[in-house]
Length: 305
Ligand code: ATR
Picture: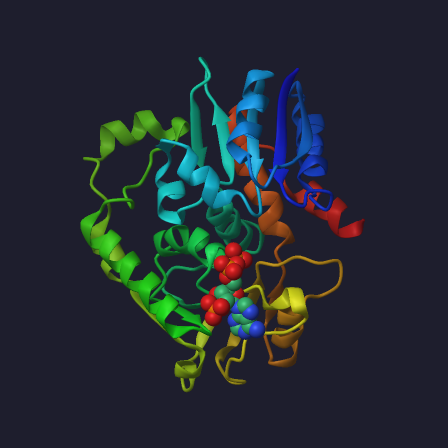
């Protein structure tokens, strides 16, 4: 039986053990998945101990995602773009690799579970902290017409947008990483160059919340921490298009404040982050085991619980 765990502080609330236990049962993969209350002053030591005891992989959550990024040398393009690691893979021989599946989780929930076509749409991302940064690259890869990052502190959104534009121009962290399954195909059909023509089609910008006046979006994603205090970011009442959707990366048992904002302002759909949570877990599971679990039954059972 291979050992995995989620490490965070606090950790009791984490649904990851439940999600991965469901994946293991469904796929028959021989693994156990626990939770570790990380030591705020010794994250590196916790990781070392887990690996020394034979651990095969970790999910990393608040507040250790940035620390994990700094600790690891072998990082995926998604982890580098996010500046954060949510999935740690122990390779044969004990070498550690850091990846980040949060952004893919969001994209899969939107596009696969809910059939929302991101390509060509106008997308507003609220927030410029770690949660926002974590999903930027996969959002850009989905090739929306516009990606506006808006934040209470405008300068942080502007910095994130120009960083994204620079990285895209220089191709540095934004090279598409072939996944193991498509490696052979990628090797034979691409030159390793990113798709710059399509990238250039997305208009990326950053601004303060007040600068949103007069702009309208097909999708508004909330990546701020306002919901934790019961509030919503101060955005204009009319910034959703008629068939626009809202997506709150936060998840709660009741509709989140931002989902309720969407419902009040005519959103065609108001989704919370439960689907994203299960999808990022599935992506981690796949990185570890090379097996893709079905997410729909797990989302359903968590929603019911
Ligand atoms: P996380 O890792 O969850 O992203 P973070 O890095 O602390 O946490 O970022 C929190 C985000 O929520 C920031 O974008 C923050 O805006 P500021 O950069 O202006 O601080 C945003 N945020 C928090 N409280 C907010 C509020 N009451 N209204 C609007 N935005 C808020």
